[in-house]
Length: 505
Image (tube, rainbow, N blue to C red; front, side, top):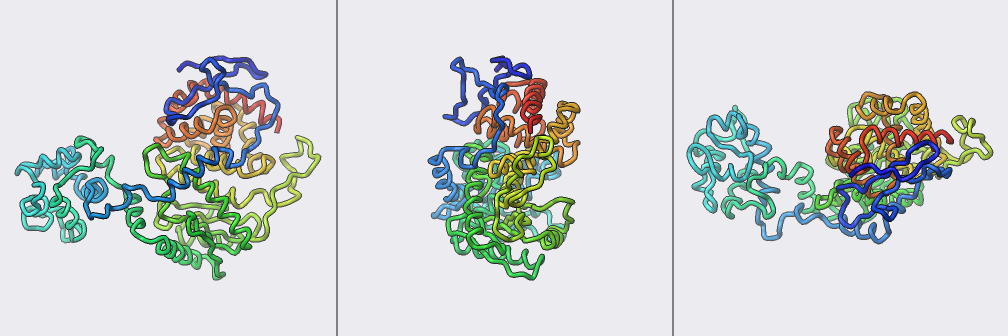
């Protein structure tokens, strides 16, 4: 789709954002009646104000998404009749232990001529014919080699044990059940593309437990981690149907309100990052621990003892969402007391805003600090996005929970404004390429997402992010498919917007 000029603004050409080519079915964008999506606001003097999280989608959509997320996907849980799935039960074993050799020019392929990269090739067998006889594990060479009843024994032992008994039993049972491939998967599809991941397997195991059993596991993991950082006993707050377990010493009313806010962010994060037809990025079966400390000392000790790392200067939160019992840990901006929204000093001139002090509360809210980590790390969990996407998305989504006057976001905007004056395209390219410092990378990402959202809609932003989950090499594809621009226009148009909007902050 070509770029269309739809008007002139104070700073030059106003370029139309196209509807993203990968927009989810049924999604629409604001158009001018001629099929063109308008990049508005170049003439506007109105400041861009962060919106509340609930504004990102209709309430009925949020409720529907929450209902879906409350139930594990059918593929995550074993069927009641005990039948085995090749995708869920067998392919992960073969990919982890066999495909490395039995593929391409692997040693196993050269010696046994058995290629296991696809289901079709697996069933074709090797130099001795078919290694799997559907319905008859006793006649299947694969089973006999796993058990050591035929040579060579597989996988090679090298003095160590091979497959666990449970893995051997699963393969044998699957063959006995007919050695079938799951419906919807082509026999020629690469096995490593659909084999269940460790995350999938963990979800399946958790799905077997009751909610109370899952909560107890999450609480025990949380207490074990907490006590490595401080001797103070935490209060544990959770809800039966919620997705978080909070360990803190916050006042109860504040703890309850925090959990409510994070539940909304959980739903939004899954809606934003989960591709259609895929399981949710943030699984509903495993509660995320929220560990909140009153000050920096136990936070630093938590990182040292649980992650074997040191905290960086200015760092006040971290997250690990790809581990068992995932968690987000943070220092409370209100030091464990009651929380007041950040309020800027009244009457400050524009020149004084960068240095002004707060008159009513800390720079940030705890919910926003935790939400920033949630989005950034959920995006990293969902694919392989560049750092500017994870950092920028986290900061942008968190900004929708806080005041536009928060010094934290003013600093991000100010850094972008400074970079525009210095040379926006060169500075932005450094950040997009991973060559800039963390603060600049976060500022560039935050500003680009704020620009996209202000001039299009949430669907365009979501689809841009989903393209970028495939890696930095997809940037030009995302710019073209979702924004209808080429790279030069991307920098020029965004730079003009920042110069006008951020230059007035």
